[in-house]
Every structure is written in structure tokens, then in C-alpha cells.
Length: 406
Ligand code: JHZ
Ligand code: SAH
Ligand code: ZN
Image (cartoon, rainbow, N blue to C red):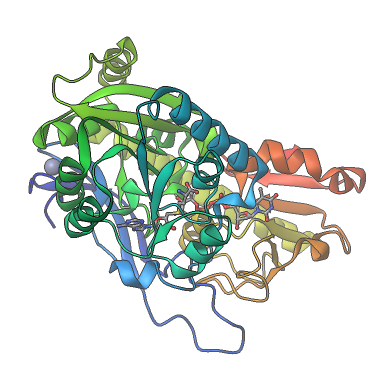
């Protein structure tokens, strides 16, 4: 398997074995999920990009029944509304500006742009979530973004001032086509702003559950700068974000169009100092992950022996990696509570643990709850006051297995 950016050799450093699709929640009573792939990750010996070794066809992941809804967290809703406000104030100030969002999902960001009356387009291949966005007044094109899509948008709407993508670019193996599309679609002064889980945070926190089918790339300032340069762009800003367990928001402009902020040089230097892309660093990460698996299985097995009641909280895509890599099933976790209608009444992929609505979580409360949505810990712990009152305990596995009294 060669690097999807530069065709260089990949150095594998972590292998999670055979995995199902992370967002394929099957109905109970049916056969096991037919699709499995090998989830393993490597670093490119040429351009340092960290990426999956095997690629899942995009139509298997992103389709009419794709269940994830961006607006399922109030913190994320506020995050996207605040970003929309910032784009309106700083980048969309010219006459009749035009903004495009890749992977707009249920319109968490673009609904605010639509309310402001600014020309926009969401490109979203998952039809169900695209319909939710459209119902909020968002203009959506049900399509995968790539070079051909960019040409079609340009012909219809003219050039874009901003293209934005949250938790979407890292899902797209074919970045060569994406960058060509951006080059065609963006105005000479236009910018591409995108945010994704940050390799530096993943390595530091050993948050191995960020690794699953949909997350093909694990970006850093170093590798994004390299990617931008290959296509005539420049990395002109980086901003660390607390959401989803630690992300970076990158801004790309055409080469020479904008002066890079000091934050870019600072993050590049920090990555160099941390030897972030060195095989030795990445192998240490893999060792920590193996230790986490051992401790988590030991803890849950011990709790089962004591007869404790253990539920899961948040049927996240991330949890597919945890559950299948650790071999955790309904014998260790009775069910997983989740607010997403399309996940409720279904089974977690591969591990086949029932997913139930949050009403079940309180009826009765468990003794322990594994917080699979650990990236939303603050929001969830603040609202689960009943679990606290019942004397419950949270189980977290990032940065290592630990207990938190609710
Ligand atoms: P959450 C998905 O990952 C998939 P996931 C994708 N690949 C990606 O990159 C990120 O999103 C952006 C539920 N929940 O955000 C809702 C509660 O039940 O961690 C969700 O199912 N109660 C596109 O799935 C899940 O937890 C709550 O109070 O790992 C959270 O999923 C809250 C706040 C959430 O993303
Ligand atoms: N931006 C939202 C949604 C992230 S989910 C958020 O941050 O919460 C990732 C989304 O990317 C999915 O809705 C998926 O359908 C979409 N997607 C996947 N490949 C894409 C592509 N090539 N072009 C545009 N969207 C894509
Ligand atoms: Zn490479």
C-alpha cells in the first residue's frame, strides 16, 4: 500500500484487525454485518502523512441511511454557529459573497449562513442528513465533492470566497481530486478552511478510537503544509480547537496571497520538537493503546464478576474501534444509550450491543457507564445529574483507563 498523497512507502505502526463499518448499525435478528476491512494505520516515509492502509469504498459509508447528526451536541451546535458568525464577519464581507461547505451534514453550520441571507451551498452525499439540512433552509447538493463536482458548481454559481469543511476532509482518501477542485472553485483571494482531529492530540492522549473506517487521514501542520504546497496553496493559519478530543482548524490560501500567522511556525516547531511523525513516537502510541485494551477488558470482566450493572453512553463511530478491538460485547455492556433516532433499536456494528434511547439509561441507572462520547464529557456530565445522584461512576479510557465519580 502506497501513500495516497505522494506514493511513498508507508510504515505501519498500529493494527486493529478486522473491523466493521463504524456507522453501520444493523437491525436485531438480522445476519452479522457482511462488510469487514482491516483497520491499520501507517506513516508515510516520504511526506509523513499518517493514514489508513486500507480504504473503504465511499458509497458503503456515506449513503441515504448515514446516521450521524452534527447537531446532536449542544456544544457542537454553538461551535458551528460561532464559526459561521466569524466567516460572515471576516471572509464573507465583499459584494454577494459565496460560501461552500463540504460535508454540511444536517446544516449545523450552514443554517446560520442561510439565516444571514448569504449565498451558500452544502455538498453532502448522505441523503438523509442532507434532507435535514434542506429542511432548515440550507441549499444542498447531494453529491461527493471532487474535481468534477467543483467544475459543476463553478459553472452554476461562480467562484467561492470560502470553502469550509469540518470533520470531512480527513474522510476523503482522494485528496488530489479535492485540491484540484478547490483550485478551480476558489476565487484568487479565496480560502479553504477545514478542521479535523489533530494527530498531536491523538498521540498525546492515546485516543486510538479516532482511528476507524471514516477517518482516513490524521493531519498535522507539517503534513497539511506539504499537501497544500503540492497544489499551489499555502498553510496560512492554524488554530487548536477543544472539540472532538482536540482538533486543528487549518486555513489554506493560494501561494503568496496571505502572510502566514505566527501560529503556523509555532505549531510546526512543536511537532518537530515532539518528533510527532517519527516511527519511534508512533510505536510508543501503539504500545499505550495495547495497554489500554488490557486494562479496559480487565476492568469490565471484573465488574461482570461482581455483578455490577454496566451500560455504555454514546454509540459513537469511535466506539466501534474500542468494542471490536477489545472484543467487548453484550456480556460486558448491557446496552449503549444514544440520542440519535437512526441508531436506537439497532445494534452496535460487529459487537452487537443494543442501542437504546436515553430514557433507558435512567431506568434504572447503571452502577458504571463507559463514556464512549468522551469528547462530549463536559456537556454530558453536566446534564446527567440523576446518574450522579444515583451514585454512578463513569469509565473513561482516554488518555488511559480511569474512573470518575458522576
Ligand atoms: P460523536 C462521528 O463520530 C462520525 P462519532 C464522523 N466520522 C466524525 O468525524 C465525527 O462524528 C464528527 C450521542 N450523544 O460526536 C450522539 C448522546 O447520546 O462523539 C452521537 O451518536 N448524548 C463524521 O460518532 C454520539 O453520542 C449526548 O448528550 O464518534 C456522539 O458522537 C451527546 C452530546 C451525544 O462522534
Ligand atoms: N461537518 C459535520 C459532519 C461531519 S460527518 C460535522 O463536523 O459535524 C462527515 C460528513 O462528510 C458526512 O456527512 C459525509 O456524508 C460527508 N462526506 C463524505 N465524503 C464527502 C465528500 N467527498 N464530499 C462532501 N461530503 C462528504
Ligand atoms: Zn506520502
